[in-house]
Image 1 (cartoon, protein in one colour):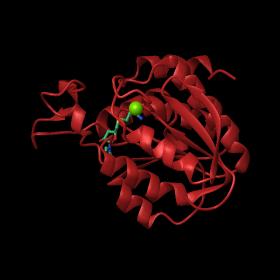
Image 2 (spheres, helix red, strand yellow; image 1 turned 135 degrees about the vertical axis):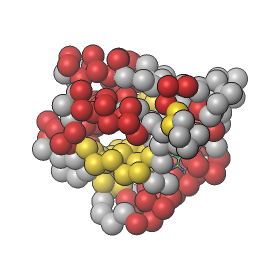
Image 3 (spheres, helix red, strand yellow; image 1 turned 90 degrees about the vertical axis):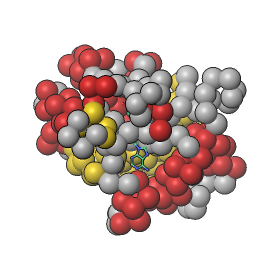
Length: 212
Ligand code: SAH
Ligand code: MG
């Protein structure tokens, strides 16, 4: 079930690194997850590329997408690193700030009314978050500490039957960092999740029993 062309065009135009094939898989998972009638939760907003797809699915179902980011960038996005974009720096404070770009992305796509953007650190937001969600998309920091923290913080909020989606899962260390792969393995080893699909580095799991 492909995204609406308008949203797909906005997705392709938005800053970010997710390829279209993975985006379509994320969108399909989001549409499936809306059947639970609960919010869709993303860790790692960046400039809103993937948020657009969650927001599109949420809009169709009359639900909300919630996206969490401190907007200061991950390790590999800092100046001097491979994924740094100098256009997303707040020169007054001398730090990255992706929030203004994200807001433009969302506004241009007409999706502002369908998204709650939370500016904060994922573990703190997770610890403050009260309700169940129908989808957890983990695409935040890729260090061991951040990835494990995202899993431990957000997976407990995922409803029975809800979908856990993890990006940048690389079984071969030659292809990329191992932290997302390790939380994917951890989720499967817990026995609380079964695998739904694999699309390049995107993994979709379904909660089949409580726990993490
Ligand atoms: N999902 C986006 C890409 C996210 S990049 C897309 O597909 O377009 C990863 C993002 O995670 C960065 O914007 C970074 O600021 C954020 N991040 C990293 N660690 C975080 C943490 N502990 N809490 C909140 N956000 C974090
Ligand atoms: Mg990613």
